[in-house]
Image 1 (cartoon, rainbow, N blue to C red):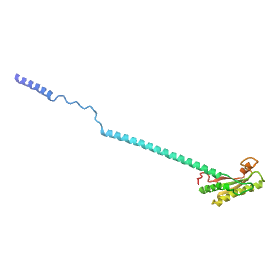
Image 2 (cartoon, rainbow, N blue to C red; image 1 turned 180 degrees about the horizontal axis):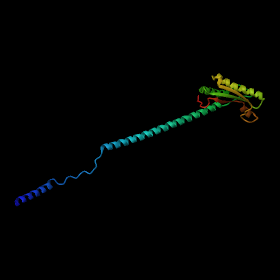
Image 3 (cartoon, one colour; image 1 turned 90 degrees about the vertical axis):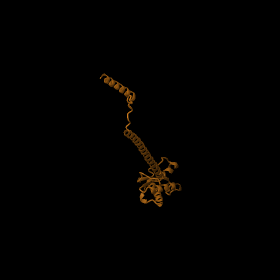
Image 4 (cartoon, helix red, strand yellow; image 1 turned 90 degrees about the horizontal axis):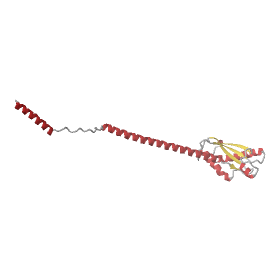
Length: 205
């Protein structure tokens, strides 16, 4: 009986020794956390989409800025053009003493007014005839009327409908320059031109 017990004890000891020498300790566990591939891909896609959205927003903002600048430039150009046209339209013509015929050096100014009236079919104008201070009131009123009619007839003869042009004589009542010499008188013998309708947005010929 003692020999059986001894054999069992020896067998267990051998088994323990065999297990410790063959199996050893279990391999250490990998402590690095596993990457969630789906979540990482989603994060990358979201980042790319956000960057593309920002680029699109910036491109849209730049396009709107350029469009606004172009509108502003266009309006400024139209304003400048309108001012130039109004200045050309308002340019006066002048007359010799006691005359109402159109002088050769004023025909170019009237030709420019013809072009403006043709480019702006809704435009109607008034021509005011003026005289210097010499002569009676009645005579100067009649002379101022002849001067305004001469300019109107020139425009009509170049294709402008007579109904678009009014005339008025101011005689000597509205001198442009104060003075009692030829320098003043020569500037006061004139026709003036002003729009009476359709002159808000004048187009350049």
